Length: 362
Ligand code: SAM
Image: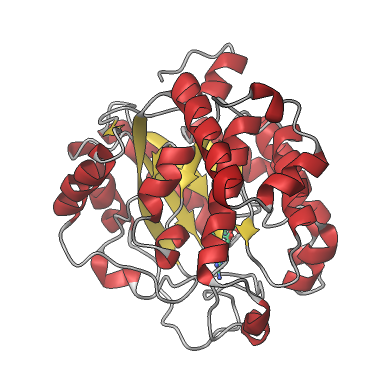
């Protein structure tokens, strides 16, 4: 029997304790978040077909493989037609939503291209496909333009809510400013998007206290979606030299799962993604994350040819089979934890639909 009293209210100290839990205590935490999840969002898992639009990035984040200064990769941008083909594919296969993710750029031609993709994607799917954008910090005008063209959600990770740690992970300039990123999240909320954020877990210099603060940050920001995952090292980045400080794989995985579990308890009706980075640590990480709190999966539908160049981190597991087989396999894996895919559903955040009068389908 799991005692609700153990989890409400969740003080900062209690969060720190639970993030450090193991054995029976960790199991009790996972049992509680599983029950919270089933009660609030059920056992349906929503699909977002992930399209990695471009690895060209103006930023130079110390942890990221597609950072501007990494000269060891071939830069690419998908052609407009290739993106639209991927959207058609997603729609035909029953993906209710797509995510367009990209290295960050703020040129007019970049914003025009995204705008055209949003409009056409809605048009060819009779407005049925849900669109999440993850294209970094943009001006208020651009956020509004994309929203008015039909984008439904925006994911912008704060990366860490600790300004002190943020400064250690980024160059010191206006392009990598903590306050600007924080303000961008406010702009997105004001614009009307379903708002998503998240953090990296297991970073060098990161403490359990910082992770507890990340959870409180996300709750207080009143987010609709959360996409967070473990930090995975990349040899061609400045942060690589601190790899000795990283928690071992099993500890990083357990920490990531506890962050998901606690997010579900703190924010029962939001959408939480089982992110791709988890799979680098454990082949079964997706099922584990779904079982204890996540309810969104983002299979990669970027044309295979480009995927090897979108390496945010190394050891990324790429499917060798066709996308169709990937969904069949996913269905089987989800069956083992009594979950099913919500085909043809946008899978909007319940938290958002409850709080906004705008009528959007679940
Ligand atoms: N440029 C956009 C932005 O800033 O939101 C979106 C693309 S960015 C590459 C997507 C996310 O990848 C980042 O928010 C970051 O959390 C994650 N990422 C980058 N490098 C990573 C690494 N080494 N390990 C895990 N996640 C990483």
